[in-house]
Amino acid sequence: MRSRINISCIIGLWLILFTIFGGAYKTPFGTLSTSHISFAWGACLLIIYMSQHQLSRFGHLIQITKKYYMYLSLMIALFFLSLMQYTFANIGDALFIDLQFKRVIQAAISFIFFAVTVDYIASRLSAEKLFFGVMIFLTGVLLLSLFQMMNDSFRMWYLDLTATDGYWYEWAQKSNRAIGLKAMSIWDTSVSYALLIFLAFAVFFQGRSTRSKLWLYLFIGLLFLLVVISGRTGLFFLIAFFILLSIFNRQYGLLVNFAILAITGIIMVLTFTDSELIVRVISFAFELIVNVFQGRVETNSTDDLINNHLFIPHISNILFGDNFFIGDGDEVTSQIGRSSDSAFVINYVAYGLLGVCITSILAVITGRIFFDYFSLDKKNYFYYFVLLICLLLSFGLYLKILIYVSATILKAMIFMTICLKHIELKKRKEFRNIYAK
Image (cartoon, rainbow, N blue to C red; front, side, top):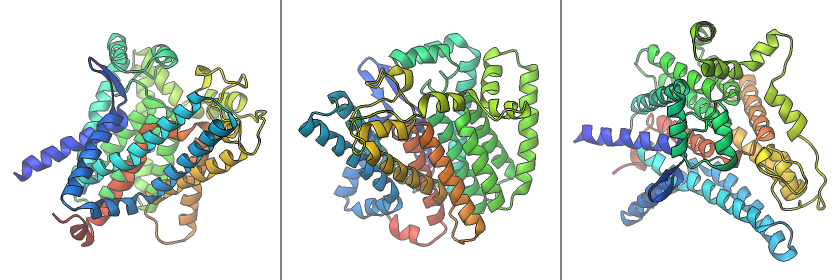
């Protein structure tokens, strides 16, 4: 009976990971999104909790994830500001109101219903089962991604299964990003992979695992490969988190070994591979490093960000904004004749200086969530250095993109928060009190 429960929980873990890294798919019954799965599963669990008088468990979950509710509250505040302007002053358009409402619902599903499913599964799996369950899932995703990269006809067939359409579909066909579970590996996918490194370090060093460190090497190697083929944004996060975690856990040998293995592996792939796509993906991921060796600290994406997306647009209402959306890059022909991907520019146009202030607070909350993954208690120089790095990474991400447009990154963040908390709780007696049957 116990083995059946373990198997069902592992399958549940894989379903959770699928809802993080999957997208929306075309079916005979219409479009099925992973958010639909999260909502249905989470709602069922909440109904069960209420029927069994276990809502105290959900109350404890709220304590774990309270920063996410602060984040959601700020999103709702921006939505109501926009709605008030549109309703009473006829500023903005209905499409933007509808878009914001969908984003608030998407965040609510991630922070409430999805969180309930993660809490339910994580409470039933040991730290090592969590680790190996995630590792097996990532191995499957890597094999799928590599096959997509090597077989273009399969890649296009899989892309046709997804609900991507219009501008994004055309872009995915032409680019090397139409890979992975949702056939759209971009910044949010790569950063989400990078966050999983905290699980590996928590299991092996916080949880005092007796397993061979070979498994740790394989896990981090998997993350490295998935991040590289997904986008260089996650590579910055992975390298930063890996260095900080290695220093914090005094695992300096990991830094040396992985530097050697990574450089050797990349050279071998670039030397011996016959796939033009694989060479292009690796060259794209390590463009900054290649440019540094050539004396240029730049990449095409940073140049594009500075030249095309970071600007101060002219708006009528500087304080509260003009209540329309200029995001999604080339997909949108905005009312100011220019689009941006930057969260600060987008929210300045939409909500004015108030939007810039709230965006800054959202970035601080996100940076603090990243910092919490480290579980640092002693306030020394390293404590504040890690906090500074997390805040810089967060502000850099918001400078580049509007974070809450992605359910992937929101789900990955709350997944790590809950899993790390369960690994910590299982070391203490209160786990039995909170999650007693």
